[in-house]
Length: 567
Image (cartoon, rainbow, N blue to C red; front, side, top):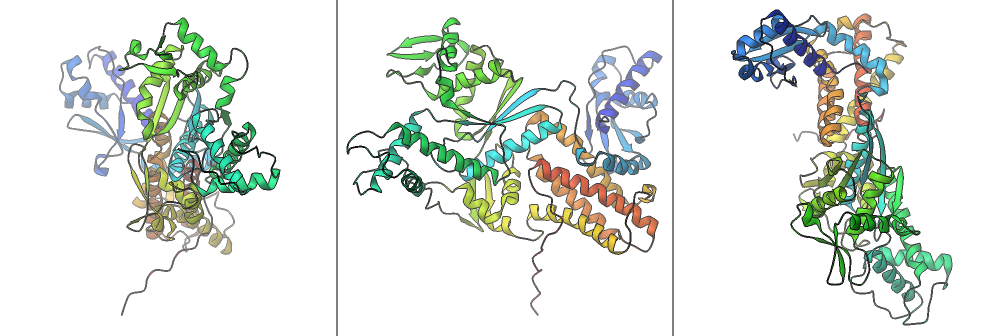
Protein backbone atom coordinates (compact mmCIF):
# COMPACT_ATOMS: atom_id res chain seq x y z
CA UNK A 1 0.00 0.00 0.00
CA UNK A 2 1.16 3.55 -0.66
CA UNK A 3 2.12 5.66 2.32
CA UNK A 4 -0.58 7.84 3.86
CA UNK A 5 -0.24 11.44 2.75
CA UNK A 6 0.19 12.47 6.39
CA UNK A 7 3.21 10.19 6.74
CA UNK A 8 4.44 11.24 3.32
CA UNK A 9 4.48 14.88 4.47
CA UNK A 10 6.27 13.91 7.69
CA UNK A 11 8.96 12.16 5.62
CA UNK A 12 9.36 15.25 3.42
CA UNK A 13 9.78 17.49 6.47
CA UNK A 14 12.36 15.14 7.98
CA UNK A 15 14.29 15.13 4.70
CA UNK A 16 14.13 18.95 4.59
CA UNK A 17 15.55 19.28 8.12
CA UNK A 18 18.39 16.89 7.29
CA UNK A 19 19.11 18.79 4.06
CA UNK A 20 19.15 22.10 5.94
CA UNK A 21 21.62 20.63 8.43
CA UNK A 22 23.90 19.36 5.68
CA UNK A 23 23.91 22.80 4.07
CA UNK A 24 24.64 24.53 7.38
CA UNK A 25 21.31 26.40 7.45
CA UNK A 26 20.34 24.52 10.61
CA UNK A 27 22.72 23.25 13.31
CA UNK A 28 23.29 19.51 13.49
CA UNK A 29 21.02 18.51 16.33
CA UNK A 30 18.89 15.40 16.82
CA UNK A 31 15.94 15.53 14.45
CA UNK A 32 12.71 14.99 16.43
CA UNK A 33 9.95 12.71 15.20
CA UNK A 34 7.83 14.88 12.94
CA UNK A 35 4.16 15.02 13.86
CA UNK A 36 1.75 16.07 11.11
CA UNK A 37 -1.89 16.80 11.85
CA UNK A 38 -4.91 17.78 9.81
CA UNK A 39 -5.69 21.47 10.14
CA UNK A 40 -8.96 22.49 11.75
CA UNK A 41 -9.35 25.65 9.66
CA UNK A 42 -9.55 25.12 5.88
CA UNK A 43 -7.89 28.47 5.18
CA UNK A 44 -4.71 27.15 6.82
CA UNK A 45 -4.43 24.29 4.34
CA UNK A 46 -4.85 20.55 4.74
CA UNK A 47 -2.03 19.58 7.12
CA UNK A 48 0.32 21.31 9.54
CA UNK A 49 3.38 20.54 11.65
CA UNK A 50 4.83 22.30 14.68
CA UNK A 51 8.27 20.73 14.30
CA UNK A 52 9.94 24.16 14.03
CA UNK A 53 8.78 25.01 17.57
CA UNK A 54 10.18 21.72 18.82
CA UNK A 55 13.59 22.62 17.37
CA UNK A 56 13.79 25.99 19.11
CA UNK A 57 15.53 24.82 22.29
CA UNK A 58 18.05 22.57 20.52
CA UNK A 59 18.97 25.08 17.79
CA UNK A 60 18.59 28.36 19.65
CA UNK A 61 16.66 29.79 16.68
CA UNK A 62 13.26 31.41 16.32
CA UNK A 63 10.32 29.18 15.27
CA UNK A 64 9.33 31.37 12.30
CA UNK A 65 12.87 31.39 10.90
CA UNK A 66 13.36 27.66 11.49
CA UNK A 67 10.07 26.92 9.72
CA UNK A 68 11.03 29.09 6.75
CA UNK A 69 14.39 27.31 6.51
CA UNK A 70 12.67 23.93 6.48
CA UNK A 71 10.28 25.06 3.74
CA UNK A 72 13.19 26.23 1.57
CA UNK A 73 14.71 22.74 1.73
CA UNK A 74 11.48 20.77 1.17
CA UNK A 75 11.88 18.24 -1.67
CA UNK A 76 9.43 18.65 -4.50
CA UNK A 77 6.47 16.30 -4.31
CA UNK A 78 3.43 16.05 -6.60
CA UNK A 79 1.10 15.81 -3.60
CA UNK A 80 2.09 19.20 -2.18
CA UNK A 81 0.60 22.26 -3.80
CA UNK A 82 1.85 24.78 -1.27
CA UNK A 83 3.84 24.95 1.97
CA UNK A 84 3.48 28.17 3.96
CA UNK A 85 4.68 29.36 7.35
CA UNK A 86 2.34 30.95 9.90
CA UNK A 87 3.34 31.70 13.50
CA UNK A 88 5.95 28.97 13.50
CA UNK A 89 3.68 26.32 11.97
CA UNK A 90 4.29 24.90 8.51
CA UNK A 91 0.96 24.53 6.71
CA UNK A 92 0.57 22.28 3.70
CA UNK A 93 -2.07 22.49 1.01
CA UNK A 94 -2.53 19.45 -1.21
CA UNK A 95 -2.08 19.87 -4.94
CA UNK A 96 -5.45 19.82 -6.70
CA UNK A 97 -4.21 17.77 -9.66
CA UNK A 98 -2.84 15.21 -7.22
CA UNK A 99 -6.18 15.20 -5.37
CA UNK A 100 -8.07 14.49 -8.57
CA UNK A 101 -5.72 11.62 -9.28
CA UNK A 102 -6.66 10.02 -5.97
CA UNK A 103 -10.08 9.23 -7.40
CA UNK A 104 -8.33 6.76 -9.71
CA UNK A 105 -6.28 5.40 -6.79
CA UNK A 106 -9.42 4.79 -4.71
CA UNK A 107 -11.11 2.97 -7.57
CA UNK A 108 -7.99 0.86 -8.13
CA UNK A 109 -7.89 -0.14 -4.44
CA UNK A 110 -11.58 -1.02 -4.42
CA UNK A 111 -12.83 -2.70 -1.24
CA UNK A 112 -9.27 -2.76 0.10
CA UNK A 113 -9.09 1.02 0.15
CA UNK A 114 -7.74 2.20 3.49
CA UNK A 115 -5.99 -1.07 4.32
CA UNK A 116 -2.52 -0.72 5.78
CA UNK A 117 0.56 -2.90 5.67
CA UNK A 118 1.80 -3.17 9.23
CA UNK A 119 5.58 -2.83 9.52
CA UNK A 120 5.54 -5.55 12.17
CA UNK A 121 2.22 -7.41 12.01
CA UNK A 122 1.05 -8.58 15.42
CA UNK A 123 -0.89 -11.65 16.45
CA UNK A 124 -3.77 -10.05 18.34
CA UNK A 125 -6.67 -11.58 20.22
CA UNK A 126 -9.81 -9.56 20.83
CA UNK A 127 -12.11 -11.07 23.46
CA UNK A 128 -15.49 -9.45 23.92
CA UNK A 129 -18.97 -9.98 25.38
CA UNK A 130 -18.05 -13.22 27.24
CA UNK A 131 -21.20 -12.87 29.35
CA UNK A 132 -22.09 -15.73 31.67
CA UNK A 133 -24.30 -18.14 29.68
CA UNK A 134 -26.90 -18.05 32.44
CA UNK A 135 -29.27 -15.78 30.53
CA UNK A 136 -29.85 -14.21 27.13
CA UNK A 137 -27.54 -11.52 25.77
CA UNK A 138 -28.70 -8.09 26.91
CA UNK A 139 -28.45 -4.65 25.37
CA UNK A 140 -25.20 -3.90 27.21
CA UNK A 141 -23.65 -7.01 25.68
CA UNK A 142 -24.64 -5.60 22.31
CA UNK A 143 -22.51 -2.53 22.88
CA UNK A 144 -19.51 -4.70 23.75
CA UNK A 145 -20.17 -6.88 20.70
CA UNK A 146 -20.27 -3.89 18.32
CA UNK A 147 -17.10 -2.42 19.84
CA UNK A 148 -15.17 -5.69 19.79
CA UNK A 149 -16.11 -6.88 16.32
CA UNK A 150 -15.54 -3.45 14.77
CA UNK A 151 -12.17 -3.10 16.46
CA UNK A 152 -11.20 -6.54 15.14
CA UNK A 153 -12.22 -5.46 11.62
CA UNK A 154 -10.07 -2.34 11.85
CA UNK A 155 -7.06 -4.18 13.26
CA UNK A 156 -7.24 -6.61 10.33
CA UNK A 157 -7.43 -3.65 7.94
CA UNK A 158 -4.34 -2.25 9.67
CA UNK A 159 -2.40 -5.38 8.68
CA UNK A 160 -2.51 -7.44 11.89
CA UNK A 161 -3.45 -11.09 12.40
CA UNK A 162 -6.56 -11.01 14.56
CA UNK A 163 -8.59 -13.70 16.32
CA UNK A 164 -11.87 -12.99 18.08
CA UNK A 165 -13.01 -15.04 21.05
CA UNK A 166 -15.94 -15.53 23.41
CA UNK A 167 -15.00 -16.89 26.86
CA UNK A 168 -17.78 -19.08 28.26
CA UNK A 169 -18.00 -19.19 32.06
CA UNK A 170 -19.38 -22.70 32.38
CA UNK A 171 -17.55 -23.86 35.51
CA UNK A 172 -18.21 -21.29 38.24
CA UNK A 173 -20.71 -20.67 41.00
CA UNK A 174 -23.21 -19.02 38.67
CA UNK A 175 -23.20 -22.04 36.39
CA UNK A 176 -24.15 -24.18 39.40
CA UNK A 177 -26.93 -21.77 40.36
CA UNK A 178 -28.19 -21.87 36.78
CA UNK A 179 -28.37 -25.70 36.91
CA UNK A 180 -30.33 -25.68 40.19
CA UNK A 181 -32.73 -23.03 38.85
CA UNK A 182 -33.31 -25.01 35.67
CA UNK A 183 -33.96 -28.19 37.63
CA UNK A 184 -36.50 -26.37 39.80
CA UNK A 185 -38.36 -25.17 36.68
CA UNK A 186 -38.10 -28.66 35.17
CA UNK A 187 -39.65 -30.25 38.28
CA UNK A 188 -42.46 -27.67 38.25
CA UNK A 189 -43.43 -28.88 34.79
CA UNK A 190 -44.13 -32.30 36.37
CA UNK A 191 -46.39 -30.81 39.02
CA UNK A 192 -43.89 -30.54 41.85
CA UNK A 193 -44.11 -27.58 44.21
CA UNK A 194 -40.49 -26.46 44.11
CA UNK A 195 -39.15 -22.95 44.67
CA UNK A 196 -36.47 -21.32 42.56
CA UNK A 197 -33.29 -21.44 44.71
CA UNK A 198 -32.15 -18.30 46.47
CA UNK A 199 -30.08 -16.21 44.10
CA UNK A 200 -31.51 -18.12 41.13
CA UNK A 201 -32.60 -16.79 37.75
CA UNK A 202 -36.26 -15.71 37.70
CA UNK A 203 -36.62 -14.91 33.98
CA UNK A 204 -39.27 -16.66 31.90
CA UNK A 205 -36.50 -17.93 29.61
CA UNK A 206 -35.63 -20.53 32.27
CA UNK A 207 -39.15 -21.98 31.95
CA UNK A 208 -38.71 -22.07 28.15
CA UNK A 209 -35.45 -24.03 28.49
CA UNK A 210 -37.10 -26.43 30.93
CA UNK A 211 -39.98 -26.93 28.49
CA UNK A 212 -37.52 -27.65 25.68
CA UNK A 213 -35.72 -30.23 27.83
CA UNK A 214 -39.00 -31.89 28.76
CA UNK A 215 -40.07 -32.01 25.11
CA UNK A 216 -36.76 -33.57 24.07
CA UNK A 217 -36.03 -35.85 27.03
CA UNK A 218 -39.29 -36.37 28.90
CA UNK A 219 -38.73 -37.18 32.59
CA UNK A 220 -35.19 -38.47 32.00
CA UNK A 221 -33.69 -35.91 34.40
CA UNK A 222 -36.31 -36.28 37.14
CA UNK A 223 -34.90 -37.48 40.45
CA UNK A 224 -36.72 -38.38 43.68
CA UNK A 225 -38.00 -35.29 45.47
CA UNK A 226 -35.37 -33.63 47.65
CA UNK A 227 -32.41 -35.00 45.73
CA UNK A 228 -30.01 -32.49 44.07
CA UNK A 229 -30.19 -31.70 40.39
CA UNK A 230 -28.54 -34.22 38.08
CA UNK A 231 -25.29 -32.90 36.67
CA UNK A 232 -26.31 -33.29 33.05
CA UNK A 233 -29.31 -30.95 33.15
CA UNK A 234 -27.23 -27.87 33.94
CA UNK A 235 -24.74 -28.65 31.20
CA UNK A 236 -27.49 -29.17 28.63
CA UNK A 237 -29.20 -25.95 29.69
CA UNK A 238 -25.97 -23.98 29.42
CA UNK A 239 -25.38 -25.34 25.93
CA UNK A 240 -28.85 -24.19 24.93
CA UNK A 241 -28.14 -20.72 26.32
CA UNK A 242 -24.78 -20.57 24.52
CA UNK A 243 -26.50 -21.49 21.28
CA UNK A 244 -29.10 -18.76 21.81
CA UNK A 245 -26.38 -16.20 22.57
CA UNK A 246 -24.53 -17.34 19.46
CA UNK A 247 -27.66 -16.82 17.33
CA UNK A 248 -28.43 -13.43 18.88
CA UNK A 249 -24.89 -12.18 18.28
CA UNK A 250 -24.90 -13.56 14.73
CA UNK A 251 -28.06 -11.55 14.08
CA UNK A 252 -25.98 -8.49 15.07
CA UNK A 253 -23.42 -9.53 12.43
CA UNK A 254 -21.00 -10.78 15.09
CA UNK A 255 -19.18 -14.05 14.47
CA UNK A 256 -16.29 -15.42 16.53
CA UNK A 257 -13.19 -17.31 15.49
CA UNK A 258 -13.24 -19.23 18.78
CA UNK A 259 -15.57 -20.05 21.67
CA UNK A 260 -13.42 -20.93 24.69
CA UNK A 261 -14.95 -22.91 27.57
CA UNK A 262 -13.71 -22.15 31.07
CA UNK A 263 -14.19 -25.82 32.01
CA UNK A 264 -11.34 -26.80 29.67
CA UNK A 265 -8.92 -24.99 32.01
CA UNK A 266 -9.53 -27.73 34.61
CA UNK A 267 -9.38 -30.77 32.32
CA UNK A 268 -6.64 -33.40 32.63
CA UNK A 269 -3.62 -33.72 34.89
CA UNK A 270 -1.38 -30.68 34.96
CA UNK A 271 -4.18 -28.65 33.45
CA UNK A 272 -3.98 -24.91 32.77
CA UNK A 273 -5.41 -24.00 36.16
CA UNK A 274 -3.03 -26.25 38.11
CA UNK A 275 -0.07 -25.15 36.02
CA UNK A 276 -0.82 -21.47 36.68
CA UNK A 277 -0.97 -22.09 40.44
CA UNK A 278 2.28 -24.01 40.23
CA UNK A 279 4.00 -21.13 38.41
CA UNK A 280 2.72 -18.60 40.95
CA UNK A 281 4.07 -20.79 43.75
CA UNK A 282 7.44 -21.16 42.02
CA UNK A 283 7.67 -17.41 41.71
CA UNK A 284 6.63 -16.90 45.35
CA UNK A 285 3.39 -15.09 44.57
CA UNK A 286 1.20 -17.45 46.63
CA UNK A 287 0.39 -17.45 50.35
CA UNK A 288 -1.93 -19.66 52.39
CA UNK A 289 -3.99 -17.85 54.99
CA UNK A 290 -7.30 -18.52 56.72
CA UNK A 291 -7.58 -21.84 54.92
CA UNK A 292 -7.54 -20.14 51.50
CA UNK A 293 -4.86 -19.66 48.85
CA UNK A 294 -4.00 -16.05 48.02
CA UNK A 295 -2.22 -14.31 45.17
CA UNK A 296 0.18 -11.88 46.88
CA UNK A 297 -0.52 -9.08 44.45
CA UNK A 298 0.77 -6.53 46.97
CA UNK A 299 4.24 -7.75 46.02
CA UNK A 300 3.52 -6.30 42.58
CA UNK A 301 2.23 -2.95 43.79
CA UNK A 302 -1.44 -3.78 44.35
CA UNK A 303 -3.30 -2.40 47.38
CA UNK A 304 -4.41 -5.83 48.57
CA UNK A 305 -3.90 -9.54 47.98
CA UNK A 306 -6.56 -11.57 46.16
CA UNK A 307 -8.04 -15.00 46.86
CA UNK A 308 -7.28 -17.69 44.30
CA UNK A 309 -8.80 -20.73 46.03
CA UNK A 310 -11.52 -20.40 48.64
CA UNK A 311 -11.27 -22.18 51.99
CA UNK A 312 -13.69 -24.81 50.66
CA UNK A 313 -11.29 -25.64 47.80
CA UNK A 314 -13.22 -23.98 44.97
CA UNK A 315 -11.21 -21.73 42.65
CA UNK A 316 -12.30 -18.11 42.25
CA UNK A 317 -13.11 -16.42 38.95
CA UNK A 318 -9.82 -14.59 39.34
CA UNK A 319 -7.87 -17.88 39.42
CA UNK A 320 -9.62 -18.96 36.23
CA UNK A 321 -8.84 -15.61 34.60
CA UNK A 322 -5.15 -16.02 35.41
CA UNK A 323 -5.08 -19.49 33.85
CA UNK A 324 -7.03 -18.21 30.85
CA UNK A 325 -4.65 -15.31 30.24
CA UNK A 326 -1.62 -17.54 30.61
CA UNK A 327 -3.25 -19.68 27.91
CA UNK A 328 -3.55 -16.59 25.72
CA UNK A 329 -0.06 -15.20 26.17
CA UNK A 330 2.10 -18.25 26.83
CA UNK A 331 0.35 -21.25 25.30
CA UNK A 332 -1.22 -19.61 22.26
CA UNK A 333 1.43 -16.92 21.88
CA UNK A 334 -0.62 -13.79 21.26
CA UNK A 335 1.53 -10.69 20.99
CA UNK A 336 -1.31 -8.53 22.22
CA UNK A 337 -4.52 -9.32 24.06
CA UNK A 338 -7.48 -6.94 24.09
CA UNK A 339 -10.30 -7.62 26.55
CA UNK A 340 -13.49 -5.59 26.16
CA UNK A 341 -15.39 -5.52 29.45
CA UNK A 342 -18.31 -3.74 31.02
CA UNK A 343 -17.36 -0.85 33.31
CA UNK A 344 -18.40 -2.87 36.38
CA UNK A 345 -15.16 -4.86 35.92
CA UNK A 346 -12.96 -1.80 36.47
CA UNK A 347 -11.69 -3.05 39.82
CA UNK A 348 -10.44 -6.22 38.17
CA UNK A 349 -8.12 -4.49 35.69
CA UNK A 350 -5.03 -3.77 37.75
CA UNK A 351 -4.98 -7.10 39.57
CA UNK A 352 -5.23 -9.01 36.29
CA UNK A 353 -2.36 -6.99 34.86
CA UNK A 354 -0.33 -7.85 37.97
CA UNK A 355 -1.20 -11.53 37.51
CA UNK A 356 -0.11 -11.48 33.86
CA UNK A 357 3.31 -10.24 35.00
CA UNK A 358 3.44 -12.91 37.70
CA UNK A 359 2.85 -15.80 35.26
CA UNK A 360 5.51 -14.62 32.80
CA UNK A 361 3.49 -12.41 30.46
CA UNK A 362 3.90 -8.71 29.69
CA UNK A 363 1.13 -6.61 31.21
CA UNK A 364 1.92 -3.83 28.74
CA UNK A 365 0.57 -6.14 26.05
CA UNK A 366 -2.76 -6.60 27.82
CA UNK A 367 -5.24 -3.89 26.90
CA UNK A 368 -8.59 -3.70 28.63
CA UNK A 369 -11.30 -1.51 27.12
CA UNK A 370 -14.12 -0.71 29.54
CA UNK A 371 -17.48 0.36 28.18
CA UNK A 372 -20.26 2.11 30.04
CA UNK A 373 -23.92 1.24 30.33
CA UNK A 374 -26.56 1.68 27.66
CA UNK A 375 -29.85 3.38 28.53
CA UNK A 376 -32.66 2.60 26.12
CA UNK A 377 -35.21 5.33 25.54
CA UNK A 378 -38.30 5.58 23.44
CA UNK A 379 -38.52 9.28 22.73
CA UNK A 380 -38.03 10.75 26.18
CA UNK A 381 -39.17 7.72 28.17
CA UNK A 382 -36.96 4.95 29.49
CA UNK A 383 -37.73 1.52 28.00
CA UNK A 384 -39.15 -0.94 30.50
CA UNK A 385 -37.40 -4.15 31.40
CA UNK A 386 -38.09 -7.35 29.52
CA UNK A 387 -40.83 -9.55 30.94
CA UNK A 388 -39.14 -12.59 29.45
CA UNK A 389 -35.65 -11.93 30.81
CA UNK A 390 -36.69 -10.55 34.20
CA UNK A 391 -34.28 -7.77 35.06
CA UNK A 392 -32.67 -6.95 31.70
CA UNK A 393 -33.57 -5.73 28.23
CA UNK A 394 -32.51 -8.43 25.82
CA UNK A 395 -30.39 -7.75 22.77
CA UNK A 396 -32.80 -9.78 20.65
CA UNK A 397 -35.70 -7.47 21.51
CA UNK A 398 -33.77 -4.42 20.35
CA UNK A 399 -32.49 -6.05 17.16
CA UNK A 400 -36.00 -7.24 16.28
CA UNK A 401 -37.36 -3.72 16.69
CA UNK A 402 -34.71 -1.49 15.11
CA UNK A 403 -32.53 -3.86 13.06
CA UNK A 404 -28.91 -4.91 13.33
CA UNK A 405 -27.51 -2.00 11.33
CA UNK A 406 -29.06 0.68 13.53
CA UNK A 407 -28.03 -1.24 16.66
CA UNK A 408 -24.40 -1.41 15.60
CA UNK A 409 -24.23 2.23 14.51
CA UNK A 410 -25.75 3.56 17.73
CA UNK A 411 -23.69 1.22 19.93
CA UNK A 412 -20.55 2.59 18.24
CA UNK A 413 -21.58 6.24 18.28
CA UNK A 414 -20.08 7.18 21.66
CA UNK A 415 -16.63 6.48 23.08
CA UNK A 416 -16.59 3.34 25.21
CA UNK A 417 -15.99 5.30 28.42
CA UNK A 418 -19.11 7.44 27.85
CA UNK A 419 -22.55 6.38 28.97
CA UNK A 420 -24.96 6.33 26.07
CA UNK A 421 -28.65 6.79 25.51
CA UNK A 422 -30.09 4.70 22.71
CA UNK A 423 -33.24 6.29 21.30
CA UNK A 424 -35.24 3.42 19.82
CA UNK A 425 -37.63 5.70 17.96
CA UNK A 426 -34.77 7.62 16.31
CA UNK A 427 -33.02 4.38 15.33
CA UNK A 428 -36.19 3.18 13.54
CA UNK A 429 -36.76 6.40 11.64
CA UNK A 430 -36.23 6.26 7.88
CA UNK A 431 -35.23 9.87 7.47
CA UNK A 432 -32.15 12.07 7.54
CA UNK A 433 -32.65 12.61 11.28
CA UNK A 434 -31.41 9.06 11.78
CA UNK A 435 -27.61 9.09 11.21
CA UNK A 436 -27.27 5.45 10.14
CA UNK A 437 -30.11 5.87 7.68
CA UNK A 438 -28.46 9.04 6.36
CA UNK A 439 -25.17 7.23 5.72
CA UNK A 440 -26.78 4.18 4.14
CA UNK A 441 -29.01 6.38 2.00
CA UNK A 442 -25.92 8.15 0.65
CA UNK A 443 -24.57 4.78 -0.45
CA UNK A 444 -27.92 3.79 -1.96
CA UNK A 445 -27.98 7.10 -3.82
CA UNK A 446 -24.64 6.29 -5.49
CA UNK A 447 -26.10 2.99 -6.69
CA UNK A 448 -29.21 4.80 -7.95
CA UNK A 449 -27.08 7.18 -9.98
CA UNK A 450 -25.49 4.27 -11.85
CA UNK A 451 -28.92 2.79 -12.58
CA UNK A 452 -30.00 6.11 -14.07
CA UNK A 453 -26.75 6.36 -16.04
CA UNK A 454 -27.37 2.92 -17.55
CA UNK A 455 -30.90 3.96 -18.46
CA UNK A 456 -29.37 6.88 -20.37
CA UNK A 457 -27.09 4.52 -22.24
CA UNK A 458 -23.92 5.33 -20.31
CA UNK A 459 -22.54 1.83 -19.80
CA UNK A 460 -18.98 2.82 -18.88
CA UNK A 461 -17.15 5.81 -17.52
CA UNK A 462 -13.67 4.28 -17.35
CA UNK A 463 -12.44 6.92 -19.78
CA UNK A 464 -13.75 9.75 -17.59
CA UNK A 465 -11.20 12.55 -17.21
CA UNK A 466 -10.82 13.43 -13.52
CA UNK A 467 -9.11 16.71 -14.45
CA UNK A 468 -12.64 17.99 -15.05
CA UNK A 469 -13.35 17.75 -11.29
CA UNK A 470 -12.71 21.38 -10.40
CA UNK A 471 -15.59 22.38 -8.11
CA UNK A 472 -14.72 22.95 -4.40
CA UNK A 473 -17.36 20.39 -3.28
CA UNK A 474 -15.83 17.79 -5.60
CA UNK A 475 -12.36 18.29 -4.14
CA UNK A 476 -13.80 18.44 -0.61
CA UNK A 477 -15.31 15.00 -1.17
CA UNK A 478 -11.93 13.63 -2.29
CA UNK A 479 -10.25 15.14 0.78
CA UNK A 480 -12.82 13.51 3.04
CA UNK A 481 -12.36 10.11 1.38
CA UNK A 482 -8.60 10.29 1.88
CA UNK A 483 -9.09 10.48 5.65
CA UNK A 484 -10.09 6.80 5.92
CA UNK A 485 -6.55 5.31 5.89
CA UNK A 486 -5.54 7.74 8.64
CA UNK A 487 -8.64 6.84 10.63
CA UNK A 488 -7.86 3.13 10.39
CA UNK A 489 -4.36 3.87 11.64
CA UNK A 490 -5.73 5.95 14.52
CA UNK A 491 -8.24 3.33 15.68
CA UNK A 492 -5.68 0.53 15.39
CA UNK A 493 -3.50 2.54 17.79
CA UNK A 494 -6.06 3.93 20.26
CA UNK A 495 -8.66 1.11 20.15
CA UNK A 496 -11.40 3.73 19.81
CA UNK A 497 -13.81 2.58 17.07
CA UNK A 498 -16.32 5.33 17.87
CA UNK A 499 -14.52 7.54 15.34
CA UNK A 500 -15.93 5.44 12.47
CA UNK A 501 -19.64 6.38 12.66
CA UNK A 502 -18.74 10.07 12.92
CA UNK A 503 -16.47 9.80 9.89
CA UNK A 504 -19.15 7.89 7.99
CA UNK A 505 -21.67 10.65 8.67
CA UNK A 506 -19.23 13.37 7.59
CA UNK A 507 -18.43 11.43 4.43
CA UNK A 508 -22.14 11.08 3.64
CA UNK A 509 -22.53 14.84 4.15
CA UNK A 510 -19.64 15.53 1.79
CA UNK A 511 -21.18 13.29 -0.85
CA UNK A 512 -24.63 14.83 -0.40
CA UNK A 513 -23.16 18.33 -0.77
CA UNK A 514 -21.50 17.24 -4.02
CA UNK A 515 -24.73 15.62 -5.24
CA UNK A 516 -26.82 18.68 -4.41
CA UNK A 517 -24.45 21.19 -5.97
CA UNK A 518 -23.10 19.29 -8.98
CA UNK A 519 -25.42 17.64 -11.47
CA UNK A 520 -23.87 14.23 -12.01
CA UNK A 521 -25.92 13.22 -15.04
CA UNK A 522 -25.79 16.41 -17.07
CA UNK A 523 -25.76 17.30 -20.76
CA UNK A 524 -21.96 17.35 -21.00
CA UNK A 525 -21.05 13.66 -21.42
CA UNK A 526 -17.36 14.12 -20.53
CA UNK A 527 -18.27 16.03 -17.35
CA UNK A 528 -20.80 13.34 -16.53
CA UNK A 529 -18.21 10.56 -16.87
CA UNK A 530 -15.79 12.41 -14.61
CA UNK A 531 -18.47 12.84 -11.96
CA UNK A 532 -19.53 9.22 -12.30
CA UNK A 533 -15.94 8.29 -11.48
CA UNK A 534 -16.07 10.47 -8.37
CA UNK A 535 -19.42 8.92 -7.44
CA UNK A 536 -17.95 5.43 -7.87
CA UNK A 537 -15.06 6.34 -5.58
CA UNK A 538 -17.51 7.67 -2.98
CA UNK A 539 -19.47 4.43 -3.24
CA UNK A 540 -16.28 2.47 -2.58
CA UNK A 541 -15.39 4.45 0.54
CA UNK A 542 -18.93 4.58 1.92
CA UNK A 543 -19.21 0.80 1.52
CA UNK A 544 -15.78 0.33 3.09
CA UNK A 545 -16.55 2.30 6.24
CA UNK A 546 -19.96 0.64 6.61
CA UNK A 547 -18.35 -2.79 6.24
CA UNK A 548 -15.73 -1.96 8.88
CA UNK A 549 -18.60 -1.15 11.25
CA UNK A 550 -20.33 -4.44 10.37
CA UNK A 551 -23.20 -2.54 8.76
CA UNK A 552 -24.76 -3.33 5.39
CA UNK A 553 -24.32 -1.05 2.38
CA UNK A 554 -27.73 -1.22 0.66
CA UNK A 555 -28.27 -0.23 -2.94
CA UNK A 556 -31.94 0.67 -2.48
CA UNK A 557 -33.72 2.28 0.47
CA UNK A 558 -37.16 3.65 1.28
CA UNK A 559 -37.45 7.17 2.62
CA UNK A 560 -40.26 8.34 4.90
CA UNK A 561 -42.41 11.06 3.29
CA UNK A 562 -41.57 14.56 4.43
CA UNK A 563 -44.28 16.07 6.68
CA UNK A 564 -46.54 18.44 4.76
CA UNK A 565 -46.83 22.04 5.85
CA UNK A 566 -50.03 23.00 7.59
CA UNK A 567 -51.96 25.54 5.50
